[in-house]
Image 1 (cartoon, rainbow, N blue to C red):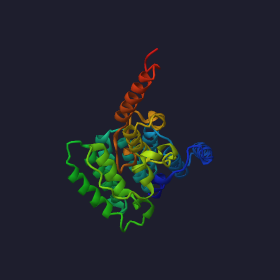
Image 2: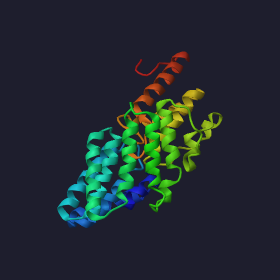
Image 3: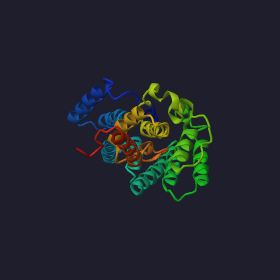
Image 4: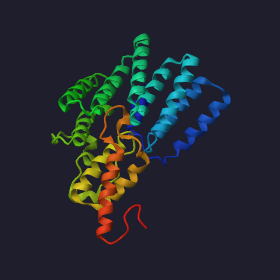
Amino acid sequence: MQGVVLTLGAGSAGHPRSHESATQEAIARRLDDPALLAFTLNAAFMQSCRDIGTAPRRAAIGSELVDLATRSGLVSFQVLGHLIRMQARSGLADFAAADQDAAAADELAARHERPLVGVFTEWYRALRLAAAEAAPVASVQRAYQAAAARLDDAGMPGLRDGLLPLALRCLRAWRGVPDDGADCGPYEPWARPDPAALGALPDPPAGLFTEALWCLVARAALSAGDRATMARARAALTPAAQEWAGAGSGLLTTGPVADYLRRLDAALGDRRQADGTPGRGTR
C-alpha cells in the first residue's frame, strides 16, 4: 500500500534508479520468483509515474500484478495491483473498468483487514463524481471533503498536505467556477501561478499530479497571453493527449488533456498567423 502513496512524490524521469529497477525486474523474471517479481513491478510502477502520458504502461503493470498476485496468493500485491489499475484506468477515462478495480480492492480489504484501502477508493469515488460533468460542484466538493477526512488518521501526511484544496482548485478551474483561494500547500506555485512571473516558474514536480498542474499553468498562460509558457505547457502535455489530467492519481482531475491542447494550439496558431508565420498543419 505504501507504494501508491510514494508515487505522488516521485522524482525526475531521468533518475538512475529507473535503470536499476528495469534490471531488477529482468532478474526477477529469470528467477521465476513471484514475490520478487511483484516487488519489482511495484518499483516499475513508481518509476513510470515520473513521466507524463504513461497511464497505458501503468495499467499494464497493474494487470500483470493482479494476475501474478492472484496466482501466487500475494494478497497485498493483489490489492495494490487493483489500486494501480484503478488509477491508470481513471487516467484513461475508463471509469467503468476503474469502478471494477475499486470494488475488487474494497472486497479484498474487507476480507483481509486492509483498512487503508478505503482511503484510496473513497478518494477515487469523489474523483469519479467530479468526472461526471452533470454532478453539481457542491456535491463533488462534499465528496472530496468526506474523503479528505479519512486522511486525518491514516498516517499519510505527505499525501494529505495540500491535497483537498488542490482537488477543489482543479475542479473549480475545470468547471469554470470562481476560485475559493484556499492555499494548496506545496502545489500552490502551479495551482495559482503569478501571471507576471510565468517565465520564471519551474516545471511542476514529476508525479501523478504533473499533468493537472501543467493544465493550471496553461490556463494562466492563456489568460496572460504568455506564448512561451503556452508552448512549454503544450510540449509537456502532448504525451498525455489521450488522458485526463491528474486522474491517473485516482484523486483529482482538471479534465481531458486534449481540451487544453486544443486551446493552446488555437492560441499559438492565431499568434503565428498574426506574426505572418505558418500555423500548425499549414505549409
